[in-house]
Amino acid sequence: MPQACGPDYPCSMQQLENGVEWKRVRDVFDPKYGYSLWGKNGISIDDVAQGAIYDCYMMASFSSLAQYPERVERMFMKDDESTNGLSHNGIYAINMYALMMPITVTIDDRLPFYAGTNTLMHAKAGRD
Image 1 (spheres, helix red, strand yellow):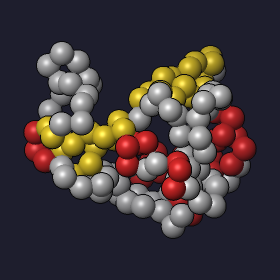
Image 2 (cartoon, one colour):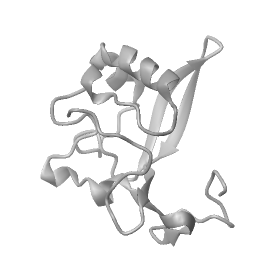
Image 3 (cartoon, helix red, strand yellow):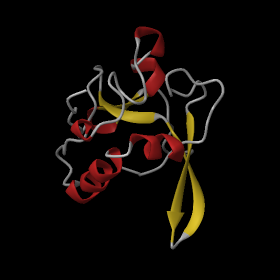
Image 4 (spheres, helix red, strand yellow):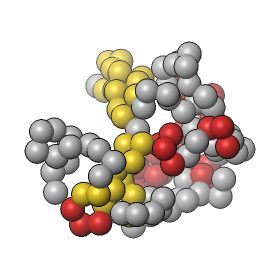
């Protein structure tokens, strides 16, 4: 399966191959019901749980960073139109460093779900 969206692989709400359905975060986790980018209790190391994709190296980094919630929040560029940190337009800009140089990485909020459900693929929920 291709890794990015494009003419041959549209990012749409339609069901895609292998039982995957790509959905926008706001369509599944509506902030008017109290959902937040940071969870009910804010950022915590208890939120980090390894799923089934052998990503322990990345989870260890996230857990270390979660010890300082304000640092995680500062990584995200502010969007005046966001609600509880959830972007209305589905775009997030994240400030990071690569080779000691500041960079901004822009991502969208489309996540893989099992088709016909609101269950994320290859993820395990933390305690929040």
